[in-house]
Image 1 (cartoon, rainbow, N blue to C red):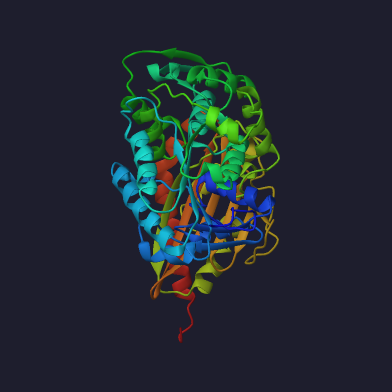
Image 2 (image 1 turned 120 degrees about the horizontal axis):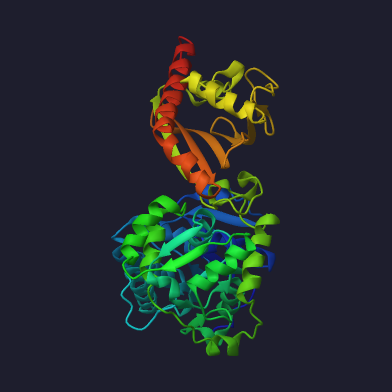
Length: 485
């Protein structure tokens, strides 16, 4: 007979780059667990700078990558899904689950903890069906599975929460589909993390399915009104029958900054009332849960206190000027160019950005934007570079500040111009075979409807500018190459 699981067990968080995974890893570490984190892209999770966490690359759709991730692991948290992959995500989810259950059994894993979703009667949503079927596939293996089913999660970065935040921020008047009257028991991120951890180490929870939800069964309209009060907004919400979830998802492409495929899959599932039978989980893990108002307050406080992964693409509040009314997820535009110059030669050119007003391409447009910023009291034209060709963390160059500096790979600049939102400009240099690729990407967190009206007209110009910037960086680097390179 096996010994009961304990805190000394080696734990894998599979899908550590996702929303729950990126919060669960530091939570488990803070509670004394030995944690291994796995994601498709190891660099993403290494960028979290977690202490005492082993980070590695693994993909459930690549069975050969799973052995190293699961070796020596006793408890594996399975947190992956393929919603962002488009229409075929259901098939991919099942293939991934089948691969993972087989690899877990071969590695001697003693427990899989799977985070699914609350399932209504006769679900029509492909997203909800996929979550349910994924749990079934995992349970078809020999490793005991504990499935935790949650509805809307209230926390910074939660896709459903961020869709609502964007709607509240952007639309003073909302003509919404009938799904705003659907009922759900939202749960605080902190409460969900406790349930995941506790259930993983309770022997009686092995093989069980546990609904988790907060104390309030409440409509999405009421959730948005409560959130609006906290953000000092007063939207009018008018539900109409003609707006289907599909039409709503198209509208969200323009309004929300949440990734489109994720938002569309979520909206498709919101037409159902979802309820949670929490008696079984409360019997195993007695806990006083936060009501909705406190859930929202805790989420906003977490942002103010920086209690979230400090990675700007996922909503670092510093990159949103410490303003929780800005969108958590960023709109983006980018351009790239390939070169046979070395990474060091390309990096030397990137680091000259802003020298004497030179931004590599279409400098007249940059000058006009800087002039507008200067006229309304922004920092453009008022600040000088510390050095003509060298940069370091914290340096300012005109209306930009260096917030990440990793030579010769990545330079991240925070926009400090006055604008209806917050922005970041990032340069990356990747080696691909014998050539290097320079990419310039702008990320913008809109502040309400004015932020969207600022961003969308600039998209064509941004694509033109960034392609031109990277092409000029490559041209200059190649021109400066020494004869023997």
